[in-house]
Amino acid sequence: MSIKTFELISTTENGVQLISYVALPENASDDHPVAGILVAPEWWGIVDHPKSVVERLAEAGYAAVAMDVYGEGKLTTDAAQANMWMEQVLEDQDMLMARCRLILNDFSDQLAVDGDNLAAIGFCFGGKVVLDMAREGMPLKAVATFHGNPTPKQPADKNFTANVLVAHGRDDSMVSMEAIEGLKSELDAAGVDYIIDVYDNAKHGFTNPHADERAAKNNVDLGYNEAAAKQSWENMLEFMENNLGK
Image (cartoon, rainbow, N blue to C red; front, top):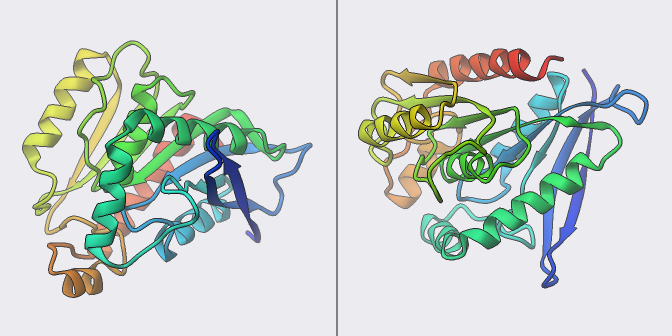
């Protein structure tokens, strides 16, 4: 399916421009709005990987937006820089969630997007972002995380209405199986429906084709696993179809 892409600029109340990246199926229009999926990138910002994710989602028939939570379109391949930016936004998680809500509202206001039919997917740090969006009660029907950090801003409660899909690598040295067990307990306590898929021989970052070069450059324990990336993507598309339709 052919797609169209554009930048969506949201301006925060203190004047920071959030430069998000949108991809739409060619057939999405004012008369034919389609379900929307928000994508929270890894800590690198909106680099090639999240852009390709939203483009693939558009090819699958969804409107999608890669969220610029750092602002000003900042991106990097340097782990120390990425970590600094991530820690800056995590120091004020209310601000981070306000930015996500602003992008969600601006994205769902697009006439080609069905604002009543929204979901979110996140990668690594972005996994925490999208789970927190659901924890905050944002209007998401489904949330999927890939090698995501499950640490909650605050634990899920009755405001958490999304169904959840977690794709986790068994060899992830940054997010432990204990952390995933903790997420299960949190979601169970809030009565949330979830699926957790654990992929063998998969490290942190297993969906990102650039993971190995980033690992080598930054001396961090990342790794791409083509089989796990492919299977987790197919599972996510099936999950979205079950929760959003087409």
